[in-house]
Length: 139
Image (tube, rainbow, N blue to C red):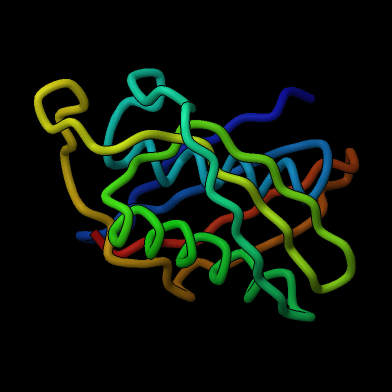
């Protein structure tokens, strides 16, 4: 099983889905899918570190909190992220996002993500032991 991310269609918005061998890896891939809505992640240098903490006893709510924390950090710091590290211990998420300041000429952002929603929200472990974390984001 190779960790990966993908988008899925949903009316006027966009779905993000992360798959990984662990719950944390699925969250990391969902974050990468979030970035990929805005810009090609390969064009974002992981040069600045931002620490993020979230907590929720429900993994689905934790995913929404994680993605919304990233949206908040992107908006307030005027940054894009291309690398993520997540540790989940019980209901506590400790994440790190690496990225850089937005350069409109070089990054060419396509849209602005307004936030993660509860639409199509799902965090599940598959039969093979891998995890899938997904939701629709408002663009």
